[in-house]
Amino acid sequence: MSDGTRRVNRGRGHSYVMDGDKADGITGILRNGIPKPQFIKSAVDKTAGYTLDYWDELAELPPSERLKRMLRAQWDYLKSAGERGTDVHTIAHKLATGEEVDVPDTLTGHVDAYLEFTRDWEPLELLTETVVGNRQHRYMGTLDTVAKLADGKTWLLDWKTAASGIWPESALQLAAYRHAEFYLDAQANEQPMPDVDRTGCVWLRADGYDLIPVKSGPDVLRVFLYAQQVAHFVDEPREAFIGDAISAPARA
View 1 (cartoon, rainbow, N blue to C red):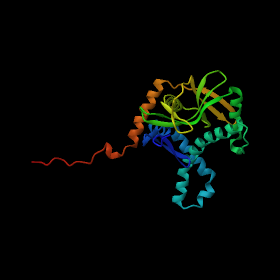
View 2: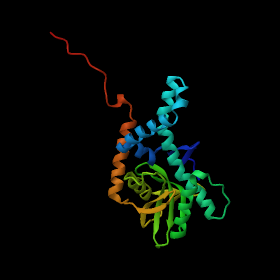
View 3: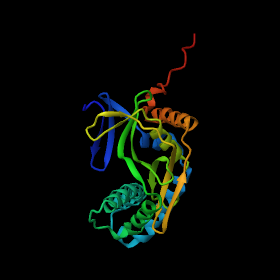
C-alpha cells in the first residue's frame, strides 16, 4: 500500500494523486474539455424555474443574495443529479445483499429499477466504486462497476439517473475507465485492469431501467485524450498565452 497514488476525498468532492503528484480526474476532463451546448438551455430552464417556484421567498432577500440564489440553482440541480446515481447504487447494493436500508421517497422508483435490473441480468460484481488510473496519460477516475451479467459477458457499467438520458460523453468516460492500466484494491494496492467484453450505461428511472451499450474502443479513447488537452488549455492562466501590450516603435 502506498499513499503516492490514491483518491483524496473532501466531503462529497474528491481529487486524485498519482505517484505523489496531482493527476487529472476523468470527470474534470469531461467537464472542461467537452462543449455541452445542451447545458446552456438546461441552465436557463433551471434558473427560470427556480425563480418562479421561489418567487415570494426570493422577493424577501436583498438583491445581491437573490441573484446568488438564482445563479446557484443550476449547480445545485447538477450536483443532486450526480449524487443521486451514486446514492441509488449504494442503497440498492445494500438491499440486494440483504441489508436493511431506509430508502428516501425520492429514490424509491430508481432503487426499484436497479433491483429489477439485478433480477433480469444477475450481475456478479467484480469491481464496485473502484479507483482506476492510466499512468501513461496521467488520469484517474472512479468507475461504478465491472460485472459479469447473465449473458455471460463481463461489462463495465456506469449508472445514470438523469431524466435526459444518456449523452455521448458517456462513451468518453467509459473509454477512459476501460483503458485504465490499473485499479486500486481494498488495500490500495495497484492491480492490473481486468479485460471487459462490453461497456454500457444502466439508465435508472422511476419507471424502470434500460441497459444501453456504449462504444469505448481506442478511437473513442483518442477523443477523450484530445479532451484532456483542451481541459489543460482551459485550466491555464491567461498570461500563459497572452502577453502584455507593447509600445509602438519610436519614430526617427
